[in-house]
Image (cartoon, rainbow, N blue to C red; front, top):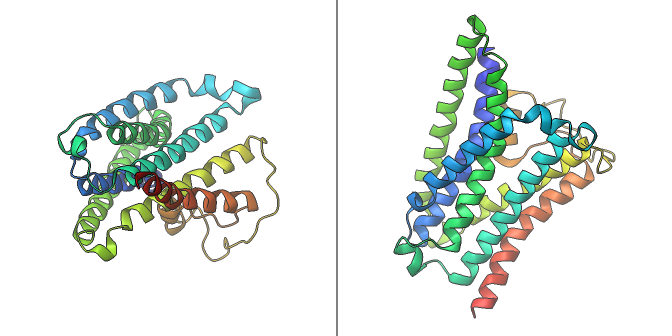
Length: 264
């Protein structure tokens, strides 16, 4: 159980930590401070994750017992839409926002709070449900708590490494757009996951897999799980998932370009 808890919590923590890091770097790029949205997003997300986890059994019974899949799809779709709206705001206002620099509540801050809250709700509820299954105590609980702590620590550490790495690269004009590129990958990942959830709920047709790499890189392996968290790796994705991934990723630069045209 130790290794299982490490991998599961690491996967869930890593997605949220990477999103935090990317948004924090973008916030600094526009002359604002991450603390304007970070604490609010974490608190709101933690409350929603707890509510979701405590009511999971009831939610799972919705819509002929596919409520959990549909709720997760809504959360992931909401993250994609919020990221696209955030990038469109960046395109309209440019790389610096006087209001944000003054610490005033801007649309950017509110969108950051929303996307962080949605991410924590989705990932945090998975961790809470996993931990809830071992509350009876015993050796398993100690192993799970230890593994969860290790996984959480690794995920947060990777997030900090990404943050400081991006912070070192972005002053160079060649790398200034890297955070937006990473947001595009994250957006595509979330939309593809939403499609997968809808497929599992039989709201979309699965269709044949476009390829299958499970023989040399299974999704359930450590590397596969990490790649899933980082770039949304699927060993045998359907055409709908691939299309959704490309659409979610393409929506970010398109939103930024549209925002810039409106600014002119």
